[in-house]
Image 1 (spheres, helix red, strand yellow):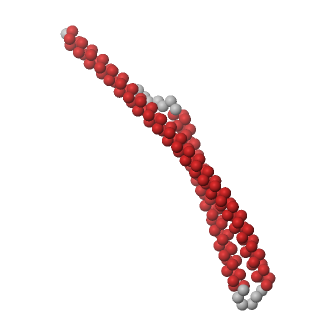
Image 2 (cartoon, helix red, strand yellow):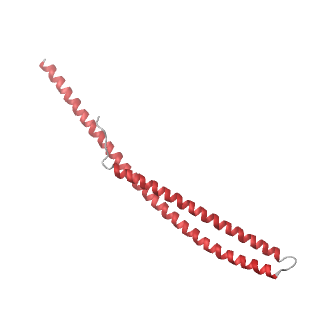
Image 3 (tube, helix red, strand yellow):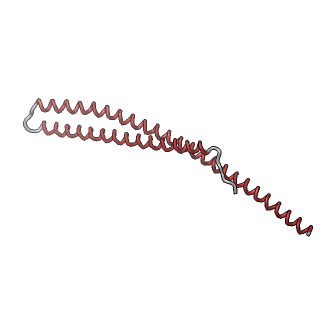
Amino acid sequence: MARFRYRLQNILNIKLKMEDQAKQQFSAARMQLDQEEEKLQALIERKQGYENRARQLLNGVLNVREIEDNKNAILTMDSYIDAQKTRVAKARKNLEEARTHMTVAIQERKTQETLREKAFEEFLREENRAESKVIDELTSYTYGQRQEG
């Protein structure tokens, strides 16, 4: 039996590498989003700490300076949180782009694999035809030899 060689194997190999790269990019984008979300959560928790402190400052002896500093800290945290929300949104957008890119790469690889499978099936049909032809020739030769003999 002859050996099967797929003419477009190089392209299939490239598609596999592209898919791996797309998966790595997706993974990196996912990690980046997770980090940005963790930072946002930390900022929100820090702001809640300042808000709890503000409630404590309003009970008992009032220290205007401390209350004002705490209010400024809360306002600063609000701006940090807004900036971090922007970073999270950007990381989500990057993740979606990476997901789209990965999906396209997977589809292209699957297309190439389907083409390879079809080429292999055609190869097997050709091999079966050639084998049948050889068997027919042997049968005809054997039958012809018996008729002569």
